[in-house]
Image (cartoon, rainbow, N blue to C red; front, side, top):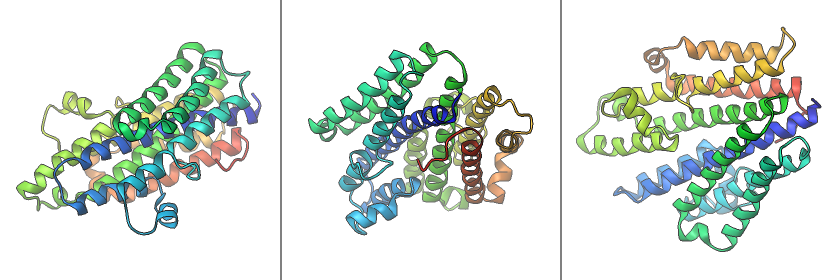
Length: 320
């Protein structure tokens, strides 16, 4: 396969996944912001969204230091100058799809094209302002539809595997950022200083983290117990059967890399395998004892390096 074609496929799926992840985080934060809480606690949540996506400097440059829920929502949903906003991600996904129209099935192309045209119509008609949660559900549904149509209509050749690589690298990156920022927001459980009020707030906090990755019901099924932060961390980092966990994503990355790599000495495959092994044989108590933030920071650095090696080995050098 031409490296340019692989590059467009990789970024098409990556941008689609990024739009979904942004919608998930915004939806959960919007829902949580309506719970009884102090203004300061609410602002921490909105600021956390900008931190997760590394968008705070760009937001501050445009809106100033004050954090406004309305401005954060507009910036992360409809601001086309923000390359990570939902509308920008869906636009970029569609443009990458159009560049390789002949490689995709008609159903995949029509899904990407219609998604972008429809999101523009919805934003222009005020659908987002009328019901933000319904809008976010629509974005998630369109991402699910894109993956489903891809799996259901495309030949499972190299094109298909590059699409999957983009999806799971983006998902791993997002989950690590989410866990890192959200665990920093609540420290009382780890310090053993939680009051009854803290514990009530923490329940909604941990629940929101799980819901943002569709993990609330999974947690209940796996652990059958009250929500505990160390178990939330274990589920989102080390459970291979959790679709959005770090280990689950790296397993998918390895499986798809194996299908496109013919060189036994592939540096990309070596790095991915080493990262997957480190997760596979890790224990959550050891990770927490050594420092969760340091572990996740290192993971993000390694995922970014993995993406860079993948680009050098298979794709066109790009600035996406």
